[in-house]
Image (tube, rainbow, N blue to C red):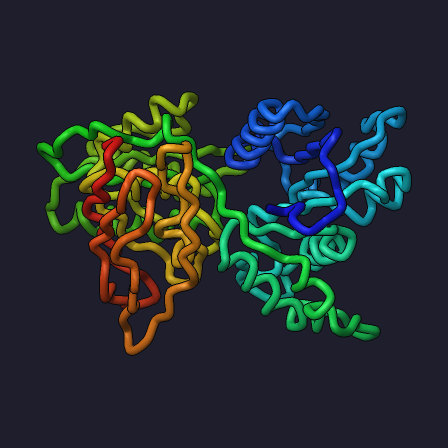
Length: 379
């Protein structure tokens, strides 16, 4: 779809990923799989998923040194954790390749406590990358719109000599390509709930996922004498917010699972046993960890941040006979405190998916979303 209307023929594709882990790794591995299936030659060069801010600053130089100079690439696919303009400047032999830039997230609206704390270079790197790309893909409508809408306000951080008409230059190259989920990994044959309510929080252990708010709610539940068990999943890196150590102690009698699950199978097994999946993220654009739970029958997906990508991907990647059903659900508008959801029956190759969702209340910036059951022939 990204190459539709272009003169590019994919003979040899170069895949570059400076942050090869989590959803970034999943997407690259999926692209390798489908390109090989089409007998397209692929060269993949990656860097480990550590210190993303350093990857965004310096990965262009690394790739410039490691991309084979003797090969001719018809297409280059890169994530936004690279300064594409720098790469092309360092390797002008790559200019003729069709360049696809994929945004898992954008730095223009990264949450900071004080505006003066914002590191301008991260967003700036992404902006100049879009100017160097032929096609710009975003993993959700919210991701794309928040980037385009905030371009001018972000550039006002510059003291003078601000560029003009950037949205007009960038927007025609933009499109939404929702993140694909594999049918085989979705949680089916879910176990009936019994005993204490099982709450799961499946996110990176970083401040932009707002773990403090989640843990405070659990502390309040304990103070109220309510019984529950909790699974705190997701990856952690060298710097872990202090609230996790505090929570591990205070929640010791309620912990079912704690820490990153090394296999997808163990992660999905926990989802099968989960009653409620929580997101408190303040910087989220798709929610790869949340979406599998939304395809699980009888799972409540609660407290989804209103100002996040979830509004545009509540039903975004559902399985069908061909393996995927990518459903383009536009951003839902919140009027008079309620979401008007006009999604009743989504067409699928094997029939219809019945989605029983309407008039979701929006209070205090969060949606209490109940995705009850999506009937589907495969379960």
